[in-house]
Picture 1 (spheres, rainbow, N blue to C red):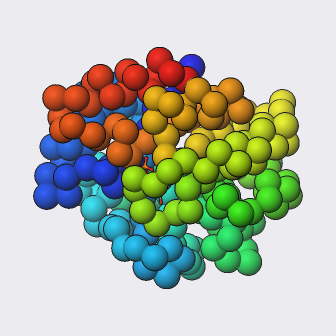
Picture 2 (cartoon, protein in one colour; picture 1 turned 135 degrees about the horizontal axis):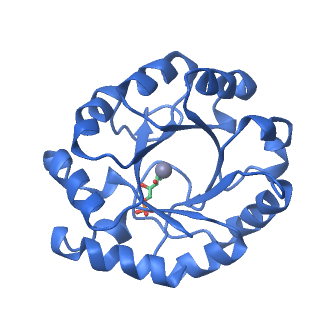
Amino acid sequence: MTVIAPSILAADFARLGEETRAIAEAGADWIHLDVMDGHFVPNISFGPAIVKALRPWTDKLFDVHLMIAPADPYLAAFAEAGADAITVHVEAGPHIHRSLQTIRALGKRAGVALNPGTPASLIEPVLDMVDLVLVMTVNPGFGGQSFIGSALETVSRVKALTAGRTIGISVDGGVTPETAGPAAAAGADILVAGSAAFKGGPAEYGKNIAAIREAA
Ligand code: DX5
Ligand code: ZN
């Protein structure tokens, strides 16, 4: 079963609590929270205070995607704020092993993310420490970008590398009803969608999520 994880980066930031509840009630499996620092990626989104403020609005799994460097000084803050899964980028620093160890020690699901220009082989040494591999299908920083089809090669490689393990593979960036099928076929079992999930406002969320789910 494919997990649909709408990214609240595409929500109305003035009504984030209501938006989180609305997308959850519309059929989201997980809530994806994109944290950007204006340093690792060229945009700033929000930090642990927002994660904490949103926590009472739904019981859905909070899938926190950290696009920050360094990540380690903030892992405990995101865990305490209510993250269930915390994903760090393999490109964000020299100590991915330590970051994943810290996330696991905090009792959270640990994820490692790969940018479109990063080879899948980089995560091989840490596969026994991860619950989730996130493959970026856009260059991280902004919602609403076009899906980079060649990144599906990375999804296939990750699928082969993780065979026999219980590791989720998520695809993030440019996921729409058109790209969800190829992403799932390549091996993704978690689809993160921002614009495609939130387009048209709350009345459309159920239809938007269903369209992505059916396409996968
Ligand atoms: C990109 C973020 C994504 C993004 C997805 O930097 O990690 O989660 O918001 O948004 P869409 O689906 O609009 O590409
Ligand atoms: Zn993301």
